[in-house]
Length: 189
Image (cartoon, rainbow, N blue to C red; front, side, top):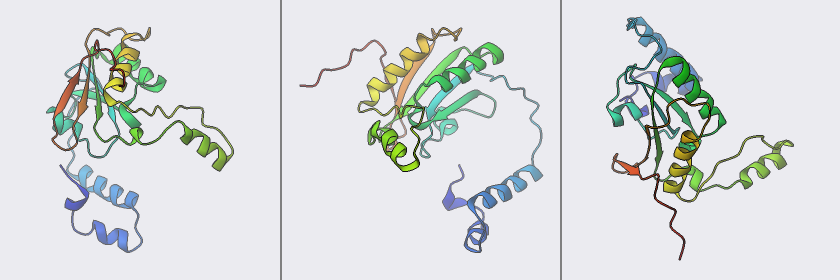
C-alpha cells in the first residue's frame, strides 16, 4: 500500500515549490502509465460482487478483503450509506455487469456519527441554498448498517437481494464484524 509517507522522493518537493496535490497525482499517473500493461479485463467483476463502503481514507478495501484488480465493483460515499445514487450504481452493476452479491461496509469512528442533519441548515445559511441531499448522519453504526441492508433488499430495481451482508470495519484492528440484519434495535435504558 502506498501512503503519503511512502511517496516517491521529489513529490513533496513539487508541493513545496508551488505544485499542488493534484499535480503530484498526475505525475504519479504518468509514472504508472509508463509501466502499464493492459490487463485485458472487461468491466464485469470476476467475483460478481459489489462493495459499498465509506469513503474514509483509513479503509484500504482491496487489502482488507483480499481483493485484486477486477474482482469487484466498489461504490464509496460518506458513511457507506445506501442512498438513491448507490441504488443507481448497484442497479447498473447487477443488471448490466453481472454482480449478484452486495457487501456493505461501515466503520468505527465514522465522521457521520459526529454531525447531524443541521449541517444542511448550516450550509443553507452559508451559501443561500439548501442542499437537496440528506446528510444521512447516524448515532448507531450497527443500526445504520441494518438500515442500509434493508434499503438494498427492498429496492425494486435490484435483481439480486438474497446475498446482501453488512459489516463494521474496526479502524484500530482491521477486522470486520458482521451485523445481523434481523436483530432488532436495542432500546435505550
